[in-house]
Length: 270
Image (cartoon, rainbow, N blue to C red; front, top):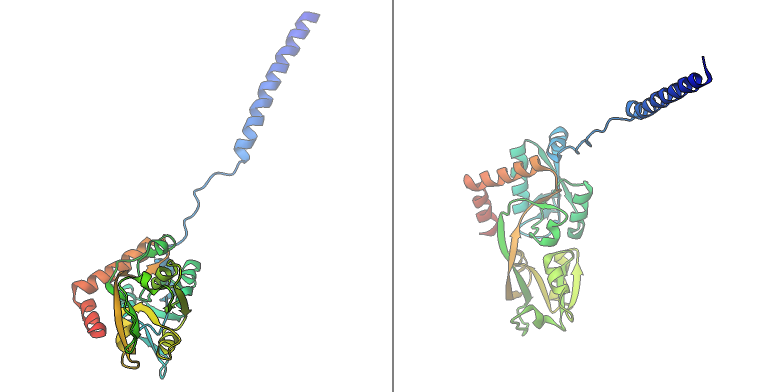
């Protein structure tokens, strides 16, 4: 073989080697690269609840007539309690009640320690950013309450500037008054303590949901001096649980359709 022919042959072999080498080099990552899989979506809370056989419901007792605690039997009772039990029956599970401070409910539901909130919870934009409201089931009023002997008169919430006003921690009433500079907002985890403080003169007024005034008016000499239309009330769950939200909404809708919810409203609110 001549020198020219040898060089030609070496060039051909070099090119072929490079082609084969590049081919193998590109093929190896393809053959060894793990296949991409869509991330497995988290299970719907509905399926978890069915498997568990219970739905964990958070509430805050002491907010009559929505949720109260029978201290003799240590059992919860009230409008929200009955409505949540109706939902559980519809799903085919039992309720595991978790009684806690109202301002802890949102975080507990986000964290998954409870599945649903049933605690006279208004629908607000802030709450809807972090939890999913279900269909609303009742609408009430918010009211400013004072002692019967009080001479306080207001035409607007801003007229409370300079006064000591009690609210339950974490409620819409708390948020509304806290947004008005000059009002001394005094927060209470327990509504009963708040009314005691009103009765003894520590507070000038309290700001609460109107339905609870009925019970406390049998204990204390109080009156309503100002009323604000409140947002609708609903149960809350975590976002992403489409089956659970559909089941709860269906339970409440059927409860209205067959008159059960209206009967509960008449029983608890008169």
